[in-house]
Length: 124
Length: 336
Ligand code: SF4
Ligand code: SF4
Picture 1: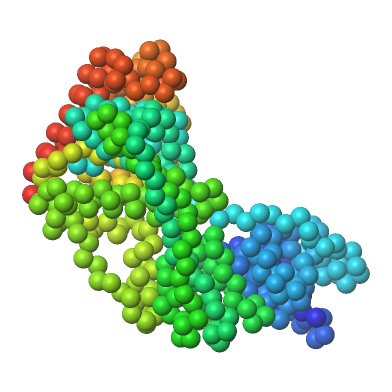
Picture 2: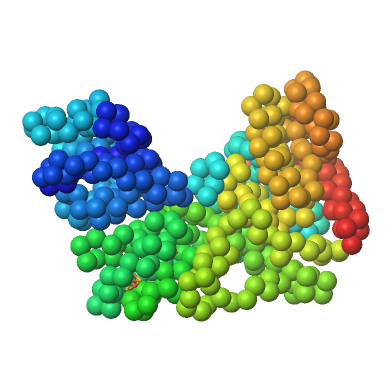
């Protein structure tokens, strides 16, 4: 199974990003090969719908599991349609979270945030 | 002649001023573009109200035709589309109705369907025609409603004055051809941008009627849409530290749009030096100072129109309106 994690820096020792759609990188960890790859998240800078596009990318990279702090409603809808399971991360690095996941210490994320797509100051 | 009234935040008296200016004119149209919270009609209490819905086009997919090429997903700038497990998912509330994906789809699997996002009410209140835009809760943008209201206005102006007929008509070519660049051009042309007013910017020399545009608060795209056609912008501000900050934001906006403008100070308590200094440094005219006045407060609280209740305020707002009209006509001669 491949596990995806949103990251602000491309290091396993760095903390998990607070945001999903706006994370700079998506880490894909392959449990079978023990390989970690970081992908640039192009939607980090996009105008709205970032969560949808990031979710699409996670799915296209073949991930079956996502570890994240929180998730917008739209991203959650996309991931749900693809049958991904989302687990809530704990404070700490990507590495620590992967270990916590493997040892069964992460819980499923179900308190999904409503999406933010208002046109606040700055416009689009 | 279009006069836009704007402020950096709500509650500064933007509606009070636009409503009273419209009431002070001989004949005026009042257009409430504050579509999330339109209040002007509460003052005008218009009669003979008619209503029309405003819809935008959003894509609809025929799964039997979709080949899963994902060109539409890659194209959509707003990320309103996702392709998951052989299904195209469309996020209606993210879609900005650019129409690009529909034009682009090589299988013709996408078609446009209407989605109602709000409505426009029109009614009469003595000398004022009252237009009110109402956006449905949860809709991402009121721009299409504002656009519709102001286009109505533009067309009417065209009918009534020959001067306007040629100068204001938008001659953008209809880019409904199925290739990617053209689709992109359409996205750009339909999406609100700060500088796309250039093809509407000829001003009338002699306008038949005054239109007051009550803008949404702030400086986001709905405000930009509202002031695009304005011949003059009135910036409403309070003489406080916060008021100054908000004034600075709208000042930047109207400067960017290259609109003639002036400031109306509301709720003045006698010490306006903060705003005075700001305006003096930048040579911004202060058109009028409205005192913090119990009578005005009382009329406003009862949703009465001060101009219609008090000679003092009729004189004040008539003067303000005259001054603005003078400035616009001066601008027009200076630039023609
Ligand atoms: S462009 Fe048309 S055929 Fe291709 S994925 Fe989109 S809807 Fe389907
Ligand atoms: S109409 Fe434009 S904004 Fe809407 S889904 Fe299609 S490409 Fe995206």
